[in-house]
Length: 320
Ligand SMILES: Nc1ncnc2c1ncn2[C@@H]1O[C@H](COP(=O)(O)OP(=O)(O)OP(=O)(O)O)[C@@H](O)[C@H]1O
Ligand SMILES: Cc1ncsc1CCO
Ligand SMILES: [Mg+2]
Image (cartoon, rainbow, N blue to C red):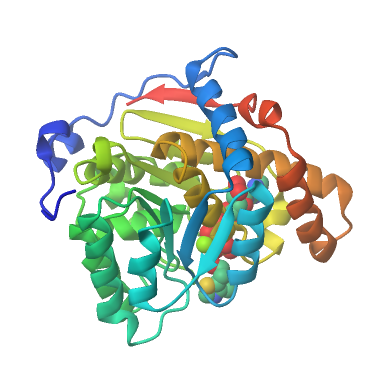
Protein backbone atom coordinates (compact mmCIF):
# COMPACT_ATOMS: atom_id res chain seq x y z
CA UNK A 1 0.00 0.00 0.00
CA UNK A 2 1.44 3.37 -0.96
CA UNK A 3 0.53 6.87 0.19
CA UNK A 4 2.82 8.52 -2.34
CA UNK A 5 0.88 10.40 -5.03
CA UNK A 6 3.94 10.79 -7.28
CA UNK A 7 3.93 8.91 -10.56
CA UNK A 8 6.36 6.08 -11.11
CA UNK A 9 7.91 7.35 -14.32
CA UNK A 10 10.27 4.38 -14.63
CA UNK A 11 7.62 2.37 -16.48
CA UNK A 12 6.43 5.10 -18.82
CA UNK A 13 8.23 7.53 -21.05
CA UNK A 14 7.68 11.26 -20.54
CA UNK A 15 4.73 12.98 -22.11
CA UNK A 16 7.03 15.03 -24.34
CA UNK A 17 8.78 11.87 -25.60
CA UNK A 18 5.38 10.32 -26.22
CA UNK A 19 4.41 13.26 -28.40
CA UNK A 20 7.46 12.70 -30.61
CA UNK A 21 6.54 9.05 -31.06
CA UNK A 22 3.32 9.72 -32.95
CA UNK A 23 3.07 9.88 -36.71
CA UNK A 24 4.08 6.34 -37.71
CA UNK A 25 0.98 4.26 -37.05
CA UNK A 26 1.21 0.54 -37.81
CA UNK A 27 -1.64 -1.19 -39.55
CA UNK A 28 -4.55 -2.42 -37.46
CA UNK A 29 -4.85 -6.21 -37.81
CA UNK A 30 -7.65 -8.51 -36.62
CA UNK A 31 -6.98 -10.19 -33.30
CA UNK A 32 -6.47 -13.93 -33.97
CA UNK A 33 -9.21 -16.32 -32.84
CA UNK A 34 -6.75 -17.93 -30.41
CA UNK A 35 -5.18 -14.70 -29.15
CA UNK A 36 -4.59 -14.90 -25.38
CA UNK A 37 -6.48 -11.61 -24.92
CA UNK A 38 -9.68 -13.36 -26.05
CA UNK A 39 -9.17 -16.02 -23.36
CA UNK A 40 -8.80 -13.24 -20.75
CA UNK A 41 -12.07 -11.66 -21.97
CA UNK A 42 -13.97 -14.96 -21.71
CA UNK A 43 -12.54 -15.52 -18.22
CA UNK A 44 -13.65 -12.03 -17.13
CA UNK A 45 -17.24 -12.63 -18.31
CA UNK A 46 -17.38 -15.96 -16.46
CA UNK A 47 -15.64 -14.73 -13.33
CA UNK A 48 -18.13 -11.89 -12.85
CA UNK A 49 -21.04 -14.33 -13.29
CA UNK A 50 -19.44 -16.83 -10.90
CA UNK A 51 -18.33 -14.44 -8.15
CA UNK A 52 -20.86 -11.51 -8.28
CA UNK A 53 -18.23 -8.89 -7.40
CA UNK A 54 -19.23 -5.57 -5.85
CA UNK A 55 -18.25 -2.42 -7.72
CA UNK A 56 -19.47 0.75 -5.99
CA UNK A 57 -20.47 3.93 -7.78
CA UNK A 58 -20.62 7.66 -7.30
CA UNK A 59 -22.62 8.36 -10.44
CA UNK A 60 -25.01 10.92 -11.88
CA UNK A 61 -28.65 11.19 -10.83
CA UNK A 62 -30.00 10.83 -14.39
CA UNK A 63 -28.80 7.31 -15.07
CA UNK A 64 -28.03 5.82 -11.67
CA UNK A 65 -30.74 3.16 -12.01
CA UNK A 66 -29.52 1.91 -15.39
CA UNK A 67 -25.93 1.77 -14.08
CA UNK A 68 -26.96 -0.46 -11.15
CA UNK A 69 -29.21 -2.65 -13.31
CA UNK A 70 -26.53 -3.11 -15.98
CA UNK A 71 -23.99 -4.13 -13.34
CA UNK A 72 -26.46 -6.69 -11.99
CA UNK A 73 -27.33 -7.94 -15.48
CA UNK A 74 -23.64 -8.47 -16.26
CA UNK A 75 -23.47 -10.58 -13.08
CA UNK A 76 -22.01 -8.15 -10.55
CA UNK A 77 -23.52 -6.28 -7.61
CA UNK A 78 -23.99 -2.55 -7.11
CA UNK A 79 -23.81 0.04 -4.33
CA UNK A 80 -24.39 3.73 -4.97
CA UNK A 81 -23.37 6.56 -2.64
CA UNK A 82 -22.58 10.27 -2.54
CA UNK A 83 -21.15 10.32 1.00
CA UNK A 84 -17.34 10.52 1.00
CA UNK A 85 -16.98 8.40 4.17
CA UNK A 86 -19.35 5.75 2.73
CA UNK A 87 -17.25 5.57 -0.40
CA UNK A 88 -13.98 5.24 1.51
CA UNK A 89 -15.44 2.55 3.80
CA UNK A 90 -17.01 0.66 0.90
CA UNK A 91 -13.72 0.75 -1.03
CA UNK A 92 -12.38 -1.62 1.61
CA UNK A 93 -14.92 -4.28 0.57
CA UNK A 94 -15.60 -3.40 -3.09
CA UNK A 95 -12.95 -4.49 -5.57
CA UNK A 96 -13.44 -1.42 -7.79
CA UNK A 97 -15.13 1.99 -7.80
CA UNK A 98 -16.86 4.00 -10.53
CA UNK A 99 -16.93 7.81 -10.44
CA UNK A 100 -19.09 9.67 -12.97
CA UNK A 101 -19.12 13.48 -12.93
CA UNK A 102 -22.36 14.00 -14.91
CA UNK A 103 -24.46 15.77 -12.27
CA UNK A 104 -22.22 17.38 -9.67
CA UNK A 105 -23.25 19.60 -6.78
CA UNK A 106 -21.09 22.44 -5.46
CA UNK A 107 -20.15 20.67 -2.24
CA UNK A 108 -18.59 17.80 -4.21
CA UNK A 109 -15.81 20.17 -5.27
CA UNK A 110 -13.39 19.21 -2.51
CA UNK A 111 -14.98 15.87 -1.66
CA UNK A 112 -14.19 14.18 -4.97
CA UNK A 113 -10.50 15.09 -4.92
CA UNK A 114 -10.28 13.76 -1.36
CA UNK A 115 -12.02 10.53 -2.39
CA UNK A 116 -9.59 10.08 -5.29
CA UNK A 117 -6.60 10.62 -3.00
CA UNK A 118 -7.94 8.02 -0.55
CA UNK A 119 -8.51 5.50 -3.34
CA UNK A 120 -5.02 6.14 -4.63
CA UNK A 121 -3.47 5.73 -1.18
CA UNK A 122 -5.24 2.38 -0.87
CA UNK A 123 -4.14 1.33 -4.40
CA UNK A 124 -7.84 0.79 -5.08
CA UNK A 125 -8.71 0.55 -8.81
CA UNK A 126 -11.35 2.91 -10.13
CA UNK A 127 -12.99 4.02 -13.35
CA UNK A 128 -13.63 7.68 -14.22
CA UNK A 129 -16.38 8.74 -16.62
CA UNK A 130 -15.53 12.41 -17.35
CA UNK A 131 -19.07 13.31 -18.47
CA UNK A 132 -19.24 16.77 -20.05
CA UNK A 133 -15.51 17.39 -19.48
CA UNK A 134 -14.70 20.94 -20.56
CA UNK A 135 -17.98 22.42 -19.37
CA UNK A 136 -17.94 24.58 -16.25
CA UNK A 137 -15.14 25.76 -13.99
CA UNK A 138 -16.25 23.58 -11.08
CA UNK A 139 -16.25 20.37 -13.11
CA UNK A 140 -12.85 21.30 -14.59
CA UNK A 141 -11.46 21.94 -11.08
CA UNK A 142 -12.69 18.53 -9.93
CA UNK A 143 -11.20 16.81 -12.99
CA UNK A 144 -7.94 18.69 -12.39
CA UNK A 145 -7.88 17.35 -8.81
CA UNK A 146 -7.91 13.80 -10.24
CA UNK A 147 -4.68 14.51 -12.15
CA UNK A 148 -2.44 13.74 -9.17
CA UNK A 149 -4.52 10.75 -7.97
CA UNK A 150 -5.84 9.44 -11.27
CA UNK A 151 -8.15 6.55 -12.08
CA UNK A 152 -7.07 3.15 -13.40
CA UNK A 153 -9.42 3.46 -16.37
CA UNK A 154 -10.89 6.52 -18.05
CA UNK A 155 -14.02 5.76 -20.09
CA UNK A 156 -15.74 8.47 -22.08
CA UNK A 157 -16.87 9.57 -25.50
CA UNK A 158 -14.33 11.11 -27.88
CA UNK A 159 -15.07 14.73 -26.96
CA UNK A 160 -14.72 13.97 -23.25
CA UNK A 161 -11.39 12.17 -23.69
CA UNK A 162 -9.98 15.04 -25.79
CA UNK A 163 -11.25 17.62 -23.27
CA UNK A 164 -9.86 15.71 -20.27
CA UNK A 165 -6.44 15.42 -21.93
CA UNK A 166 -6.54 19.20 -22.27
CA UNK A 167 -7.59 19.77 -18.64
CA UNK A 168 -4.75 17.46 -17.52
CA UNK A 169 -2.26 19.25 -19.82
CA UNK A 170 -1.19 16.00 -21.44
CA UNK A 171 0.34 17.65 -24.50
CA UNK A 172 -1.41 15.68 -27.22
CA UNK A 173 0.39 16.36 -30.53
CA UNK A 174 -2.69 16.21 -32.76
CA UNK A 175 -4.89 18.27 -30.44
CA UNK A 176 -4.18 21.41 -32.44
CA UNK A 177 -5.67 19.85 -35.55
CA UNK A 178 -9.01 19.72 -33.78
CA UNK A 179 -8.75 23.01 -31.94
CA UNK A 180 -11.35 24.75 -34.09
CA UNK A 181 -13.86 21.92 -34.17
CA UNK A 182 -13.46 20.26 -30.77
CA UNK A 183 -15.85 21.60 -28.20
CA UNK A 184 -17.95 19.98 -25.56
CA UNK A 185 -21.60 19.49 -26.53
CA UNK A 186 -23.11 18.78 -23.14
CA UNK A 187 -23.00 15.07 -22.51
CA UNK A 188 -22.95 14.07 -26.22
CA UNK A 189 -19.84 13.59 -28.37
CA UNK A 190 -19.14 15.95 -31.26
CA UNK A 191 -15.88 14.21 -32.25
CA UNK A 192 -15.14 10.91 -34.00
CA UNK A 193 -13.64 8.18 -31.87
CA UNK A 194 -10.44 8.18 -33.93
CA UNK A 195 -9.86 11.89 -33.35
CA UNK A 196 -9.34 10.95 -29.69
CA UNK A 197 -6.80 8.20 -30.49
CA UNK A 198 -3.65 10.12 -29.60
CA UNK A 199 -5.25 11.65 -26.52
CA UNK A 200 -6.31 8.16 -25.39
CA UNK A 201 -2.84 6.67 -25.90
CA UNK A 202 -1.07 9.49 -24.07
CA UNK A 203 -3.65 9.40 -21.28
CA UNK A 204 -3.21 5.63 -20.82
CA UNK A 205 0.58 6.12 -20.54
CA UNK A 206 -0.01 8.86 -17.99
CA UNK A 207 -2.42 6.74 -15.93
CA UNK A 208 -0.18 3.71 -15.74
CA UNK A 209 2.57 5.79 -14.14
CA UNK A 210 0.27 5.90 -11.08
CA UNK A 211 -1.63 2.63 -11.44
CA UNK A 212 -1.50 -0.55 -9.37
CA UNK A 213 0.95 -2.88 -11.23
CA UNK A 214 1.49 -0.05 -13.76
CA UNK A 215 -1.53 -1.20 -15.74
CA UNK A 216 -4.19 1.23 -16.93
CA UNK A 217 -6.52 1.74 -19.89
CA UNK A 218 -8.52 4.38 -21.70
CA UNK A 219 -11.77 3.51 -23.49
CA UNK A 220 -13.38 5.80 -26.06
CA UNK A 221 -16.95 4.89 -27.02
CA UNK A 222 -18.75 5.55 -30.29
CA UNK A 223 -19.86 3.72 -33.42
CA UNK A 224 -16.58 1.79 -33.20
CA UNK A 225 -15.14 1.72 -29.68
CA UNK A 226 -11.42 2.30 -29.12
CA UNK A 227 -9.57 0.85 -26.12
CA UNK A 228 -5.87 1.30 -25.36
CA UNK A 229 -3.37 0.43 -22.63
CA UNK A 230 -0.85 2.89 -24.11
CA UNK A 231 0.99 0.20 -26.15
CA UNK A 232 -1.76 -1.16 -28.37
CA UNK A 233 -4.90 0.43 -29.78
CA UNK A 234 -7.84 -1.98 -30.03
CA UNK A 235 -10.96 -1.19 -32.05
CA UNK A 236 -14.30 -2.89 -31.46
CA UNK A 237 -16.88 -2.30 -34.21
CA UNK A 238 -20.60 -3.06 -34.13
CA UNK A 239 -23.27 -2.35 -31.56
CA UNK A 240 -26.46 -0.41 -32.18
CA UNK A 241 -27.28 3.21 -32.92
CA UNK A 242 -30.24 2.72 -30.58
CA UNK A 243 -27.69 3.09 -27.76
CA UNK A 244 -27.74 6.83 -28.51
CA UNK A 245 -31.54 6.91 -28.01
CA UNK A 246 -31.48 5.85 -24.38
CA UNK A 247 -29.80 7.88 -21.64
CA UNK A 248 -27.02 6.22 -19.73
CA UNK A 249 -25.63 3.84 -22.33
CA UNK A 250 -22.19 5.35 -21.72
CA UNK A 251 -22.66 5.74 -17.96
CA UNK A 252 -23.70 2.12 -17.55
CA UNK A 253 -20.81 1.03 -19.78
CA UNK A 254 -18.53 2.79 -17.27
CA UNK A 255 -20.25 1.00 -14.38
CA UNK A 256 -19.94 -2.41 -16.05
CA UNK A 257 -16.29 -1.64 -16.84
CA UNK A 258 -15.80 -1.18 -13.06
CA UNK A 259 -17.56 -4.52 -12.49
CA UNK A 260 -15.00 -6.23 -14.75
CA UNK A 261 -12.16 -4.22 -13.18
CA UNK A 262 -13.13 -5.91 -9.91
CA UNK A 263 -12.00 -9.26 -11.37
CA UNK A 264 -9.39 -8.54 -14.04
CA UNK A 265 -6.74 -6.13 -15.37
CA UNK A 266 -7.75 -2.70 -16.75
CA UNK A 267 -7.24 -3.50 -20.45
CA UNK A 268 -9.25 -6.73 -20.24
CA UNK A 269 -11.97 -4.97 -18.21
CA UNK A 270 -12.39 -2.24 -20.83
CA UNK A 271 -12.32 -4.67 -23.77
CA UNK A 272 -14.80 -7.05 -22.12
CA UNK A 273 -17.30 -4.33 -21.29
CA UNK A 274 -17.09 -2.87 -24.80
CA UNK A 275 -17.50 -6.25 -26.53
CA UNK A 276 -20.40 -7.27 -24.25
CA UNK A 277 -22.14 -3.94 -24.93
CA UNK A 278 -21.71 -4.31 -28.69
CA UNK A 279 -23.13 -7.82 -28.83
CA UNK A 280 -25.92 -7.14 -26.31
CA UNK A 281 -27.05 -3.96 -28.08
CA UNK A 282 -27.18 -5.77 -31.43
CA UNK A 283 -29.42 -8.43 -29.86
CA UNK A 284 -31.56 -5.77 -28.16
CA UNK A 285 -32.11 -3.96 -31.46
CA UNK A 286 -33.35 -7.18 -33.02
CA UNK A 287 -35.71 -7.84 -30.09
CA UNK A 288 -37.22 -4.34 -29.58
CA UNK A 289 -39.48 -1.72 -31.20
CA UNK A 290 -38.19 1.58 -29.83
CA UNK A 291 -36.14 3.10 -27.00
CA UNK A 292 -38.34 1.79 -24.17
CA UNK A 293 -38.35 -1.85 -25.17
CA UNK A 294 -34.73 -1.50 -26.35
CA UNK A 295 -33.55 -0.68 -22.82
CA UNK A 296 -35.40 -3.68 -21.39
CA UNK A 297 -34.13 -5.98 -24.15
CA UNK A 298 -30.60 -4.64 -23.62
CA UNK A 299 -30.60 -5.61 -19.93
CA UNK A 300 -31.87 -9.07 -20.89
CA UNK A 301 -29.10 -9.37 -23.50
CA UNK A 302 -26.40 -8.33 -20.97
CA UNK A 303 -27.63 -11.25 -18.90
CA UNK A 304 -27.86 -13.78 -21.77
CA UNK A 305 -24.89 -13.07 -24.07
CA UNK A 306 -22.39 -15.90 -23.71
CA UNK A 307 -18.73 -15.57 -22.79
CA UNK A 308 -17.93 -17.26 -26.08
CA UNK A 309 -19.88 -14.65 -28.08
CA UNK A 310 -18.25 -11.77 -26.17
CA UNK A 311 -14.72 -13.13 -26.48
CA UNK A 312 -15.06 -13.93 -30.20
CA UNK A 313 -16.18 -10.37 -31.04
CA UNK A 314 -14.47 -8.61 -33.96
CA UNK A 315 -11.45 -6.74 -32.54
CA UNK A 316 -8.49 -5.19 -34.35
CA UNK A 317 -5.15 -4.39 -32.74
CA UNK A 318 -2.63 -1.70 -33.76
CA UNK A 319 0.75 -1.29 -32.03
CA UNK A 320 1.60 2.33 -31.17
N1 LIG B 1 -23.41 5.13 -33.65
C1 LIG B 1 -23.29 4.08 -32.82
N2 LIG B 1 -23.40 2.83 -33.28
C2 LIG B 1 -23.27 1.76 -32.47
N3 LIG B 1 -23.01 1.85 -31.13
C3 LIG B 1 -22.88 3.07 -30.61
C4 LIG B 1 -23.00 4.26 -31.41
N4 LIG B 1 -22.80 5.33 -30.61
C5 LIG B 1 -22.57 4.85 -29.37
N5 LIG B 1 -22.62 3.50 -29.37
C6 LIG B 1 -22.44 2.62 -28.21
O1 LIG B 1 -23.17 3.18 -27.13
C7 LIG B 1 -22.51 2.99 -25.90
C8 LIG B 1 -22.31 4.35 -25.23
O2 LIG B 1 -21.41 5.10 -26.00
P1 LIG B 1 -21.56 6.67 -26.20
O3 LIG B 1 -20.36 7.09 -26.99
O4 LIG B 1 -22.91 7.02 -26.71
O5 LIG B 1 -21.37 7.12 -24.70
P2 LIG B 1 -21.70 8.48 -24.02
O6 LIG B 1 -21.70 9.60 -25.00
O7 LIG B 1 -20.83 8.61 -22.83
O8 LIG B 1 -23.20 8.15 -23.54
P3 LIG B 1 -24.10 8.81 -22.37
O9 LIG B 1 -23.29 9.90 -21.74
O10 LIG B 1 -25.33 9.28 -23.07
O11 LIG B 1 -24.40 7.72 -21.40
C9 LIG B 1 -21.21 2.26 -26.23
O12 LIG B 1 -21.41 0.89 -26.01
C10 LIG B 1 -21.01 2.53 -27.72
O13 LIG B 1 -20.33 1.48 -28.35
C1 LIG C 1 -28.43 13.61 -19.68
C2 LIG C 1 -27.38 13.75 -18.65
N1 LIG C 1 -27.13 14.96 -18.07
C3 LIG C 1 -26.16 14.93 -17.16
S1 LIG C 1 -25.47 13.35 -16.98
C4 LIG C 1 -26.55 12.73 -18.15
C5 LIG C 1 -26.56 11.31 -18.54
C6 LIG C 1 -25.72 11.00 -19.72
O1 LIG C 1 -24.39 11.19 -19.54
MG1 LIG D 1 -21.41 9.80 -21.25
